[in-house]
Length: 97
Image 1 (spheres, helix red, strand yellow):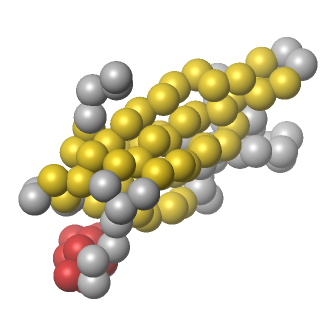
Image 2 (tube, one colour; image 1 turned 60 degrees about the horizontal axis):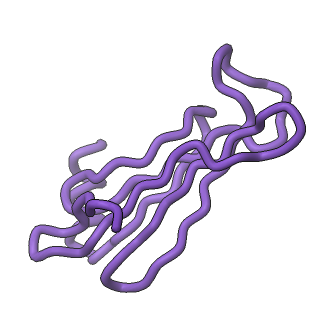
């Protein structure tokens, strides 16, 4: 299942996999691709310790910026920012300028 799907995505040239069904927010490189998993944006069915959140994705074919926005008291605030750069091995973390 999972490995065959990842191999297929990679062979097809997929850069970014978006998910969100399990209500946990994270961003990570995987096999040269990026996985951006959103949390729960507006639902009240939250996992304890996981407030409402969403991801903001900006970039181009060479660089991507992924921000995690999380609900704090009166509004959403950026709690994490990750930068990635395309390399010959795929998407890799890139130091912030």
